[in-house]
Length: 313
Image 1 (cartoon, rainbow, N blue to C red):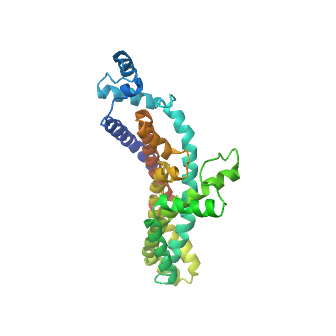
Image 2: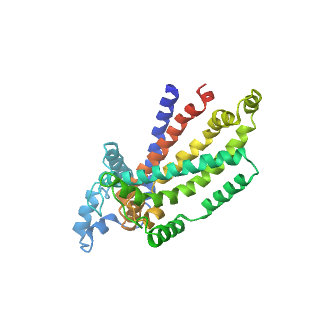
Image 3: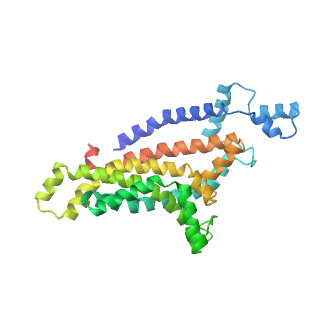
C-alpha cells in the first residue's frame, strides 16, 4: 500500500505542472491590460510602463510563467491588484468559510443519500424505492438559487427561525455560525445527496446480486448483517470517488449559493476577482481548487483500501 501511495503521489507532480501551465496560459487570453487597469484614471505612459515592469508584463509569456511558478513554489501567489494584499492571505481568509460549508453540506448529503440508497436497493420496486427516486429527481431538478430563496422566505421571512444571510465565525459564536450555515448547507447537500443516492442504489443492486452475497444468505446470516457488513462495504467503492469529486466541487466555491446567502467564501472571492479583472486572485484560487481536486482523488484511492480489502492485493 505504501509503494502504491508513493507512486500515486509522484504521478501528481506532472499533473500539477500541466494544470499550472493551463491556468496561466488561459489567463493570458483574457482581454484587457492589467497595467492600464492599475494605472486607473492616470493613464500616463510612464505609470503604465512602471506597472508593466513590476508585473513582468514586458517579458515573454514563458518568462512570465517562470516568475509566477517560481513564486508559487515559494508560497507566493502574487498580489491582489484590487485589495493590495497577497493572494495567499485572501485565500487563507476565505478558505475556512468554504471548507466549513463544504463539510457541512457533504455531511448532510451522506446522512441522506447512503441510507436512502441502501433502503431503495433492498426494497426495490416498493414505495420506498419510488419515493427515493422522486426525491433524487427533485434534488437534481431544483436549482440551488431557487431552493435557497424559498428557504429564506420560509425560515427567515415567514417563521423567523434563521438569519437570511451573513456569516459568523464559529470561534466567535458557534450557535450563530450554525444558524447562518445550516440553510446553505442543506441547499448544497440536497443536490449532492440526490446524485449520491442514485449511485449508492445502483451499486447496491449490483452487489446484492453477487455470488458472495448469496453465499452469506445461504449460511443463515441475518439480512441486516448481509446488507451492512457484506454488501454495503463493497458498494461504497464507486460512491467514494463520486463523493470526493463532489467535495472538490464544493471547495471550489458554490458561487450561486454563496451569493444568495452572502457568505464570504471562495465563490464570492472568485466572482469579485473576475469582475474586477484581478488576475492574480483568479489564478491563485483556480490553482488551489485544482490542487484540492487532485488531492481529494488521491485520498479517495487510499480510502478504497479501507472499504475493499481485495484491492490491497
